[in-house]
Image 1 (cartoon, rainbow, N blue to C red):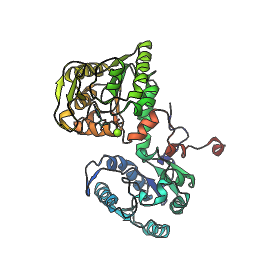
Image 2: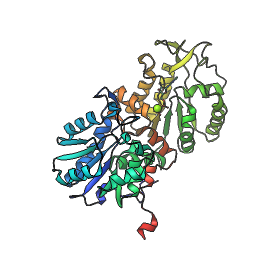
Image 3: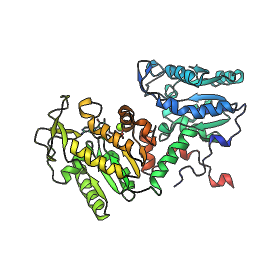
Amino acid sequence: MNGLKFISTIRDFELRGKNVFMRLDLNVPLDGTTITDETRIRESLPTVKYALEQGAKIVLASHLGRPKSAADKKYSLEPVAQRMSELLGIEVILLSEPDSDATRQMLKTLRANQVLMLENVRFEKGETENSEELAQVWASFTDVYINDAFGASHRAHASIDALPRLVLKKGIGFLIEKEIKMLDQLMSNPKRPYVAVLGGAKVSDKIDVIEKLIDLVDVFIIGGAMAYTFLKAKGVAVGNSLVEADKVKYASEMMGRIEVRGKSLLLPVDHVVTSSLAEKTGTLCADVNIPDGKLGVDVGPKSIENFAASLKEAKTIFWNGPMGIFEEEAFSKGTFAVAKAVAESSAFKIVGGGDSAAAAHASGFAEKMTHISTGGGASLEYLQGDKLPGLEVLRIKRSEVL
Ligand code: ADP
Ligand code: MG
């Protein structure tokens, strides 16, 4: 599998003196104006640094959160521009008015130790509407378009889709290149045993990924709220745990298919339970059956042991979905234990999904993973075989080559 076929990279262009419009995913979590996780800024640096070294004149663009209008100042990229400036050691000039003449003027006089950053592209209504009019404003000062916003590439928005349609020289940056290469390795000739750890809130969110993986993986480990739908399908008592009633039949069929294919499925054999989600303490349910009135909020110690034993043997691991409500300390043990087991395995190990990435970072084992995808939704959509608009628009058509 080569998801990058017919897509140029930033290396393919002469950048000296050229105006480079660089779409990044700088959508970092903020607490007021404090950045609480700067991973996405750091992951964007190699492409920006490369373009600077090549002598490009750079206009950075990104969205941040979901502002309703430009008046929503809490979604300003100001703190991001500041942090970017510190990390690059150069001046990052934030342009609050994305007027094309002003930007073109600024680009003319831009010095080598400066980059421009547009204010939150979602302050413009046209961004989410994929407006060609807005894209034309940006295209008017763009020589080369580079998309390195993996986490936004599953959205056909103006800075991802409409703009590159108007630009001849277009390609990806180093982050997207890395993301796609890593995800491709999960899908073609993976080393065995291949273990997929799935969890999180809903089976329905993950069905398409399961379908893609079913012929590829050797072992499915299923935890999180998802597990209760499967346990229910097996006739296990699940109390008040989150179950998707309309997916019980699917779960049952899937278990049948796993068995027919001679693959394994590990489900929780014990649980951490509570009486209500308002309660922030849990008790151990050592039996696989959950009593009436209780709901499962994390996997138990015996389950962790089983999961860890399987992960230890793995040569390829894909992990998506927390094992419990890890945001609550009392229910985080299973998720962090899985993070540890994945980290300690010698496998090629990829973490995908927004909450799973957050869990991997919070676990303290992030450094030990082969790759943690910066694109929550985008990584899952790519793996399940959906075409990402941000990549498709960059693919050079055969007619253009001939
Ligand atoms: P990702 O973003 O990595 O794809 P999901 O969004 O599918 O992951 O799932 C993450 C959410 O699942 C978390 O908010 C977590 O609290 C929730 N979750 C996990 N286990 C349970 C459970 N047993 N009951 C309710 N919610 C759960
Ligand atoms: Mg999520």
